[in-house]
Image 1 (cartoon, rainbow, N blue to C red):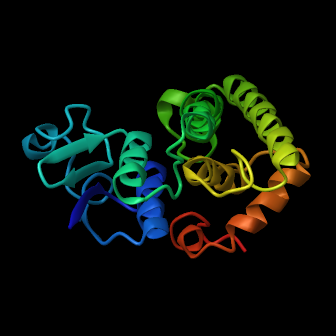
Image 2: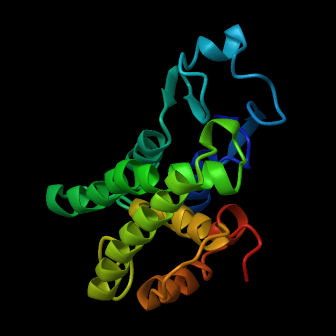
Length: 207
């Protein structure tokens, strides 16, 4: 049985939970972070010195970093689902996963912390507006890619790239910002809503 340490509000924890749903993997979720136990506790820091969720425990293996956990689960239990075995298609999936973790996340972080979390360390309205503009620009890149594939982020098949980016699309749609019309992203979101795992762990109540 897999053990996942985290809380279901966290976007990074939800990546892992959605991956488990796609692979039909049973797990136990231990509540850490958020309203759960403190990630500053020595027991948690012994597993992840960064004090962040999620953490995966699979037997003797302990992993942190959400995209790495998703890759491991797909490689270990997916039998080719979600993450191709062949080098070239796998690299395309991982390219977009890395883009989500670096370029896309970096773009929205300030705006989200300012507008949604109201974090005192992110109080500069001009910086938040610049973040929104960058966020929308990155989403336009995604729109172009989805228009090209006509289906999912890395091609015609659903993959881990859609797990991590699908949650980011949901965050973009839920945040109180002015958004451009991105028709390929809108159609993509409707495709994601056909997946039970996304409805449970990703859609956050959106219709």
